[in-house]
Image (tube, rainbow, N blue to C red):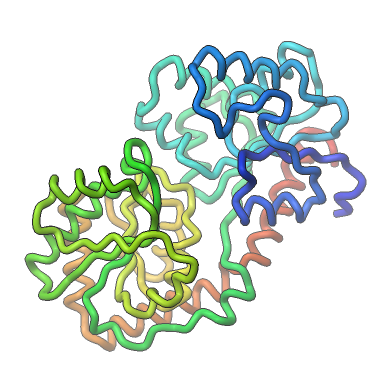
Length: 357
């Protein structure tokens, strides 16, 4: 469709949108705006009362009327409140691609926060979800109040796929995770506690097994986790600009997230021929299960450990078959160009629901 016929605002966080969100928004010719453009709060540590006041300022003064539709990252609370307070008709369509829906489902939030999110989500005009898991969560959490939902996927940039080498040997018992955080809710969300315990247990059965983590974590959080799981053969490698120098050294990607919408790092690892084991609450599970159903496990240390040990008990030929199948799947179905096309189609369907097509 000709997106130029509509005036579309795209609201995103600071310091800027994730690269895949940027690609999606650019593909519909949206006009970029910070989610806190009127009164800044998103990247500031503020007392609750001041943060809520700034939400209200954005709700009251953001120029909804300038746009035919507003597309935004995440289920922010203030946009629907602004529509209500000002009787605005401009449709609101968020892309749900973070931890919020799972945290609502798992009752992780304070009841007041939960009520705020439920109100906001149920008052959006349509929802675009990053994958099947997020779509199912939206319907489970909101029930009959759930707006129409439209599903998308994530993808690896086409130019990256042409340069990612595919692993040939899987002799090294190295398990990889790419994730970062400061601790607290990020540790919970990324399942880092589960991951380290699984490595600790699996190393007792797989000779020479090590776990490598790429990503920046606070020293205090690393110390806390390694103290909680003594003897776990885990190495924190820190942040890296070039993960492709490390990928060939790994034999397995393990991600035991609690609600990870759809980590692109999992797809990148699979593109490099590294089979993945993920929790059922990891959005990329729908890609992993196409390679091998055994690669999707419950949020259980025991089940995940069994899966890791079972993988390393496979023959080299069996591992290579999983490797080739992983790399082929990503190149055939999960390119960024394909993800953008699917997003554009989902957004067009959402526009039909709100009467703009």
